[in-house]
Amino acid sequence: MKQKIVVKVQMTCKKCHAEALKVAAAIKGVEFLGLGAEKDRVVVIGNDVDAVKLATSLGKKIGPTQIISVEVVKQS
Image (cartoon, rainbow, N blue to C red):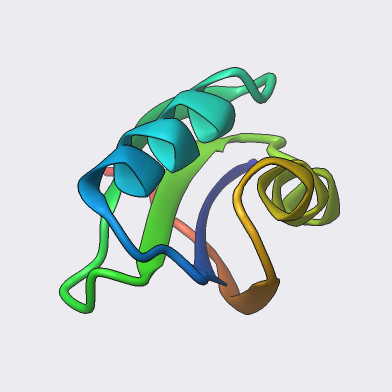
């Protein structure tokens, strides 16, 4: 099932943004990732991505994290 996950991560600099994207890209099933409109958000889209594992990995490498939303993406 394809899903969109938005995670709030405490990031203070461009290096933190790059590191957060790198950590998120390493998670199994990720097809797309980017920063949200608010620069403290990481948006991940993929098949069967584990939101808790994503948040835990970001929390260990970057800083405090919070899962904002997990929603199913309708495929066209």
